[in-house]
Length: 442
Image (cartoon, rainbow, N blue to C red; front, side):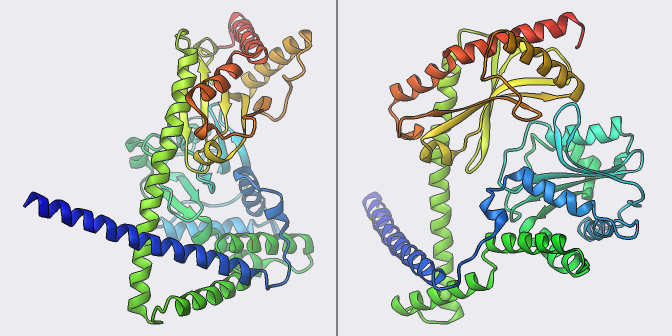
């Protein structure tokens, strides 16, 4: 009996492998045909696509649209609020009068991607995850507490928009606790660029853009074109898809009917799931090794801790020094901006020094640090943005981290952590935080 079961399992395994091989051949053939078909269409240029947008860029565009006023009325904000009303299954208690509409809004303990607020009345918190950025610990909790405690907005008038690419990413329990979820109820509103923002732009915003506002209209066309291209919805993309698929169906002798195509679709989904699981397994192995070697370097110093948020196509790995804590609302740390993809495909990895938190304390910390760096003639410590004061891309000498040997990986990371520049940064941050504590900045 056991022999028969083993033989059956082996035969099934072979059958699955053969099925997946056919599907992979099909996918490669389709991709080649699709690229060929796309090349037949006129040359296209989208400025937003060429500027390599990040999540902050999308937040800025959305916030600028919500700031639009016509005859002293926030036309598109009101339209956006109407959409929120439909999505949260009830009347929104939002009466727009004199809103503050802000991007990268500082809270003293993080920054809100987009915020629409009237103190004491209502708040719309927009958390933008278009590129699958990892959820920070207690991120949504902290933002809700900020608008409730510091901006005096009643809990029942707080709305959180969790904005993703296509609705596939869901908020983590670490970011949104059960308590906060209970407070928000249906005012925690998952939205996506594909199924919410794009239709809103096409159906509500663009039709109500005055023709005399040429720059605004052009910007809207470009952004809509960009998003539609992202989701394969442009006319030339759909035609190229149709042409390539027709050729594939003909070549593979697949009948053009719902049932047969549905079967093939389910097979492709099964393959996609298997490949996704394998990618995540391999990615986690590389991530765990990165974390292990980082902890190995700092293991003799109990003053260090880390935060591993390395994900598929985005993420970060943060390194905290306990000597830098103790000042409420201030969070200096070293941070790698890395993902599974960068660990397997990039020949350089970037390390930064971030000083985040309360704007007053953060500015004081920055000023002390940069003054000390200036006194030591350290050129690589300077202000790059409101939170970043050191940036360096480290070369892997043409290799990829995930495919390097253990010794090569260890040599790469330990060499950076032990370099003169990182040691100087740590030393100067130690001195800076000690000075702030001596001045009772905590």
